[in-house]
Image (tube, rainbow, N blue to C red; front, side):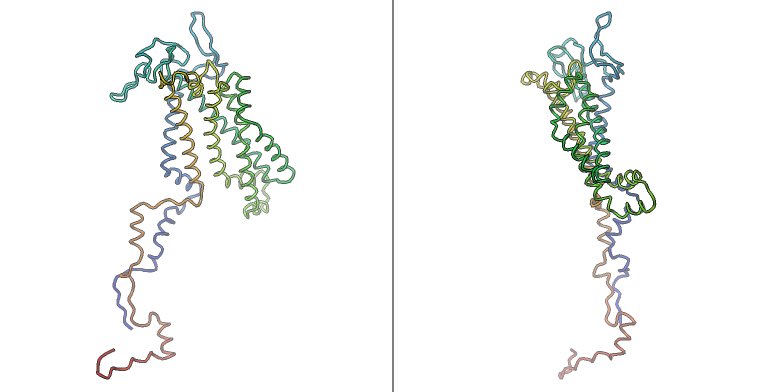
Length: 394
């Protein structure tokens, strides 16, 4: 028996090298760390998160915000208008309800090169109001409604869906029939009614939209709980003496957090569009406060002569909705265990180079192991091939 090694390669260690690289990349990481890692590597979600943070920072720091009060205009002894409530000032000197002398024929004074904001970067309307201040205040209102809808829908939907899916029976029937009743209520109509009754206050508006928007989330959570309550870890928790509350919130709910977060982001994105639509129709945020949809509705007749009155509020509506959708996509991919991170070119090259090739295989001309030798000795060696009559080797 003779062996001719062509390359010193350890075949057993090199097999499956590409899989071992992927496994080593996630070795020792918990489920939460894996989710954060996949989310932070989602470029679209990261860009959307940064843009959303910048928009929120710009909106709430530029023109300030109003805390408490009715939000109505009031005049002091000198005739100066102010908003009823405690206003936290911002770095932008102008507000959204005062008329100013028209500058540059109302055209935007924003220039990109050289960069300059000017006196009215987004322009002015026919009355002289600053469009930049109006858009920033409208963005504040949209973000407020968006966050309130997300929080209220999250709490109500998860609570009712979890109780329905875990206990089943008459509790499930009662909650689902109540959910069916809420589903048939038209959100646009109810939102318009409450918008008129409460003067278009963004906080009240967001709360009522959230109360009507949880139904889809509750159904998804219920379906997830119906499947998870039959799993082995739930039975183990019952055997260990865990209470129903602990099983729901400590064992089942963490396994359903993916679908909950993704659906909540979709509800928040829809809330931005719903608020803009109702305000455009005149049933959402009302004067003297402003919203992005109200700005578009107020200046819809000036589309041909002053199109910038539509560009800026429309741009911020689209930006908010797209950012929330991209963040939701990133969270969906992060919580999906079937999503695998893509290998970089360097790791792929290392994996391909580690796979054994033909030059790395041991060329064997005899028995490949001691067992083969024993077997051949037991049954006899193979007969030599007959020699050629002409004396040539076979």
